[in-house]
Image (cartoon, rainbow, N blue to C red; front, side):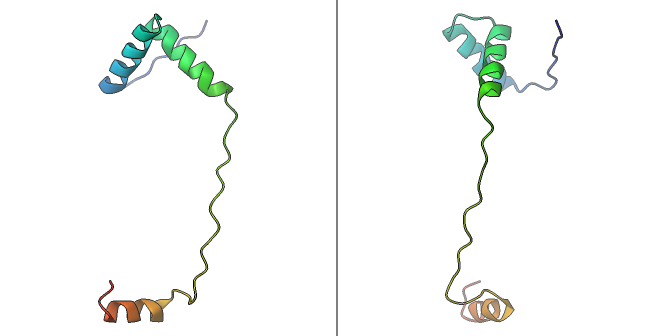
Length: 73
């Protein structure tokens, strides 16, 4: 069976994993494998970008200059 070494594992994450393993009565390795299995079984999420906001006037250099002149920068 292949092995896995995780370098520079953050101490805070190690503590959280250890607490979760203890809570589920599992070894640290078994808990990590369970979390990986659950995460990899979920379908990939497709993140859609929000629709662009179309305002009353375009934001261009003239608009920005006007806003700066009115102290809105």
